[in-house]
Length: 168
Image (cartoon, rainbow, N blue to C red; front, side, top):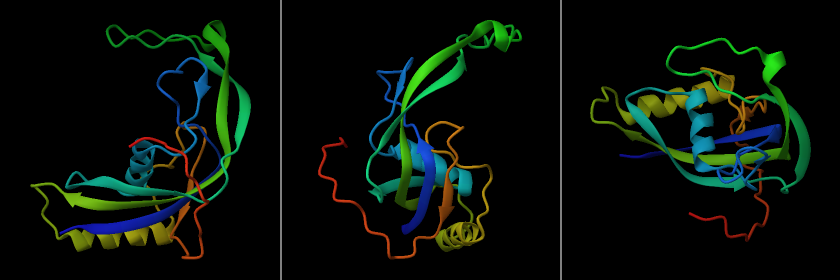
């Protein structure tokens, strides 16, 4: 049995970084399915099920904003971790992000074999969490500094007419 759910998410800015442009971040024009799954898991996650994103509706026109951000050049090594002194290793990088974004994420819950509850229990818990604004951690839109807000869809939202080929 499957259960379809939807949630409206929005934010002031978003950056869904294209993998071929890691140093100077450039965003995809819309939210990626993995970013949508991350938002859903921030709201409600259990090891007994997984999220399958079925549709992402774009509610606002795609608009870009160019930013300069301070980032750290190096990474902490996994073997023998050493502290990083931010003042010594800081660099400025350009980001081409999205601004004033809103989406409706439509997804379904798929139970894993070890699930011990009916799918309705997980579905209802997700809906209650969305209604109350509860989350395990603050959802974000691509990068952690771009916070996402969420609420149940009202039914009045209309997606923008978007005919671009965005891949599968």
